[in-house]
Image 1: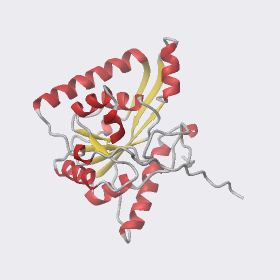
Image 2: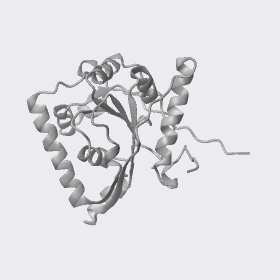
Image 3: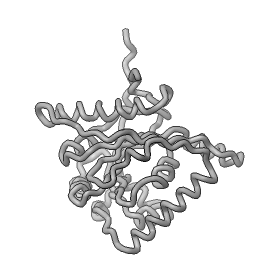
Length: 241
């Protein structure tokens, strides 16, 4: 008998702060801050890692697009930010807003705060607005930082957004960015080997009723991410190349 794949329960936000959830306005100050943060991220990547970047040419010139990515650790955000366009709006868990420094930095940069594990109509409206403005929205379809160090079962949010807006989906994968690996190397003054792989954008097709299309879309997204990853990072989605 084939061993049943474990499904880890997904988190639910305990912090409730709905008034913070909105599409950030692109003020002159925010654009300048985003440019600085992208430069600073590239600097950190340069001095702290040995990087391999693949597929930068696959990034669309403009949206609308849903960027889907695996989530291994804090360094995902730094590595992704270093090479992302300024029009990318990250979807970020509301709990981070409560962190004294990081919360202020993220809010100044401009993110779409989301309450995980519950319907968040404000976040949905913010994404729809971003799509209307031809922006890109970045989301981790696993719903959190992986507890296993590999792909966990995906949630349906990314597929729902892609089908609802007919936006193209851009698959992005990281390796080497686990907190344990990065911070252990920092303690030893060692650089960490990391990779950022950007796949070719694609669109999801609606087949039959919306619910089944979302389920199929989630499988398509997660298997696409798995194929961009080495076998040891595929986790729940052990696909063949």
